[in-house]
Image (cartoon, rainbow, N blue to C red; front, side, top):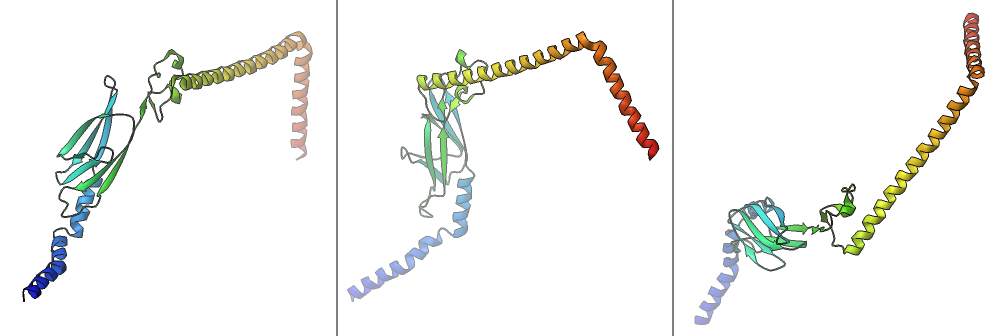
Length: 213
């Protein structure tokens, strides 16, 4: 009798208890939590003294937690939280429901890429070419001084070549213009009457055609 009673209780728990737990968190509730998670925003700022980043999460809700996949640490707060001492690189933060009775699944994931600070961007070698990628404050990858110097020097030399070519072309056009002008000054008494005769001939021929029409 006791065995039958124990079996009946166990069977009851196995059949009905999961429905009871699931009933605590409906599909609409999960969707609501997912929307809260998706609306979370983030921003970051760099402290040049510490040479570290801080990440600030906003639009938070006390019902969810943020967990770093790098450290495994969890964070929870209302409205916003600020986490300090990050170095450059890629980070992943998973967002869960604080009450895991509702769901243990990930509600949303935030991927954050912290750029590399370019310590050479204020160098004199970057004067006048501040828009060049290797002369900007932030880089996608960390580069050594030798690589940076090689890239910037090569770029500066390429600009000089372009400017030199433009100057050479400009000088060529000036020379041609001077030759034409000199020729005209020396032979204007021939060229000018010739131009007048040609223009008069064109006008005469045009008028004749119009008379024929």
